[in-house]
Image (cartoon, rainbow, N blue to C red; front, side, top):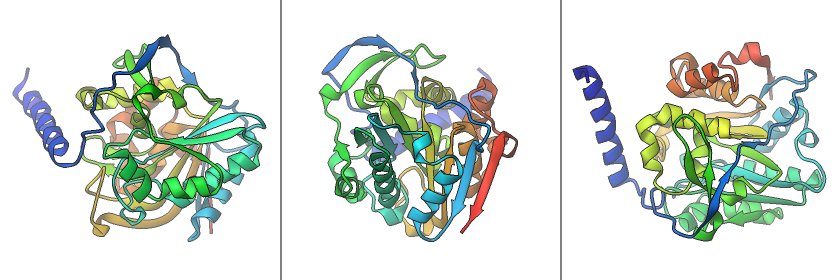
Length: 318
């Protein structure tokens, strides 16, 4: 191994160790024992392409509900994605014991509004869940997501051991892993990340948010962080990606803490191309998507386009 490569890899390992030691990764890496038999699955929840709509829309408005609805309407509206009688799982970021103002978790107002829209569209049920890094009960409560979702009729699941199944993903780095069953046993999957800085992957947006479907020792994935992110994006292609860029965590990610780290953008992105979505959202964090490893790798894999404008982009100013 070349000296430069050794220093880079050991430096990343040291950074990961310090993060794990000091930021509450107990639940992030805990063992799960009660699992069902291994299954061979590829979760593809995508809807059919429609040339009448862009693949990526962004709306700006001080009211997050207005921004979400404008962005969603511009990409075809909720009824393009959710049909009567379908089950829907919504995957926000509920990873951290933080308040909404700290921009570590998805805005609860947006998660509740998406839940309400799915139910209004005729969904049989809407389940909202995540595999948290900090204590799940504290994360779900302090984030405001549990109450907000239940107030509009959604179902919030705090994962327990029996909720996991072992899945053969058969990807380049991810082969067999524990997956929260609600992200497998559903008709539609809506990925709702918040746009954030990340100390290892530079940013955590849509594709990285899919780490939250996994149980077990997720820190092992950081050995090949870019490839594992892309493997997950291939394995679990969402119906719709909705990015919360109302408040953006510009540094100190993934869990932040100081309000000085937070930028106000009042924006919501909706996308059927998860790579294009991450590319556009990364710019809010001051990044160039062509310099972000997992976005470049995802583009090369063919699951989406780094060039979001070429892919089809529409911006709505409030």
